Amino acid sequence: MKDINKNDDGNGGYDLIVVGAGSAGFSASITAADAGKRVALVGHGTIGGTCVNFGCVPSKAMIRAAEAIHGAQAAKRFPGLSGAAQVDDWHALIQSKDDLVATLRQKKYADLLPQYDGVDYIDAGPAHLVKGGVTVGGRTLTAPKMIIATGGRSVLPTIDGIEDIGALDSTSLLELETLPKSLIFIGAGYIGAELAQMMGRMGVKVTLVTRSHLLPGAEPEVSKALAEAFVAEGVTLLSGLSYESVSRDAAGVTLRVMRDGTPVEVTADRLVATAGRRANTEGMGLNEIGVRTDARGSIMIGDDMQTSVPGIYAAGDVTDRDQFVYMAAYGAKLAVKNAVLGDTQSYDNSSMPWVVFSDPQVAGVGLSEQQAREAGFDVKTSVVPLDQVPRALAARDTRGLIKLVADKTTDRLLGGQIIAPEGSDTIQTLVMALKFGMTTKALGATIFPYLTTVEGLKLAAQTFDMDVAKLSCCAG
Image 1 (cartoon, one colour):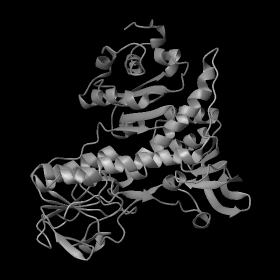
Image 2: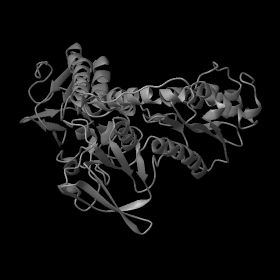
Image 3: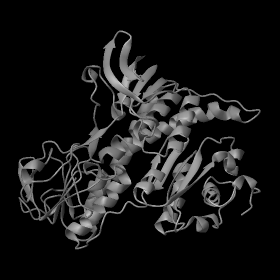
């Protein structure tokens, strides 16, 4: 690591202090350093933050492994084929995941710091904000501007007894020494959905429990299609309920819920809580200096990324904005530009894609049908099941659909969602369509390569005006 006194006169000498060394913190520090600014990057947690250490990287590595198991077992969908795969060594799988995390943490974070002379990395414990700077490791650092990027963490839902049963979260689940035989997942958002299906494919008996329904933020048609896929794989879904209590005995963990007025009990080896997250803002002195937070502890920011205190900005999962690593990096760059580079840019998520790495994958961009109606648009929609997409037919996998939302008056696309095996890659085409204000007719007239999942977007656009079931394979 670098000499922390290189750019420091002992107490200050910095143009910018960045608190938090995850994706947002690094993005902010690199952006400022590239512009010739002197930056104090205060660790305040594991270098690399949530994504590389506990979130995206480890979970997606394990999800891919589970996909390999499922892919072998699913070979029978083709006549004349069969296949089988299983977990032979859970410990080896976990170790390979940990090795990948360690490699990326070193390569994409720790090893980058010496390449930026303007950044001093200070890893001396948690930071405490004071007027004009922060105290860390017994010293006070000052700068005219500051960016808070301390991220967030998993929290336990409020259920009687849950504090006493050794509940797992998304991090500790992937650190288990042995593969459990059964699991209860509480929470069916994108984290719960991804991990529940992954563990089911690893051979674990999975029950996924939620107050509302699977992927409550997705279009109803999309949520239903994914629920059908989960059930077909043997995942038990319990939705539309309220939690009563949870306890542990010799048989394992028992969750008691009320469903349609009837008590239901589910027992498994362990319980995994994936029902919520909270910003890492405790003990930082935010209230003392006037930085406003919401009920989840998230820092409230304006479109310029500035907090309620002039000169103090925030970015990433610690804020009340979108909780995605790429939006953390985007917001951090925006914060730097506005804080120390003299810009006046505004946060814009109107064409922000989001992805759930389930199988089929779920992805979306823009407004849902309900959001568009609530925004006052005269809405029209188009839904194309994957059995109308040649790629899906050839792959013998028609699980899923594509839904587009448009303004009936102007024909301009407002948003869309897809559930398909290649949904995560397909969505970027729709992102570009929204970014440049395309109409449904323009998208339907665009040339797409045949036998691709992305061609489904063309078919969905054409469905606004015609029945694509009556088209030949390459017509239109």
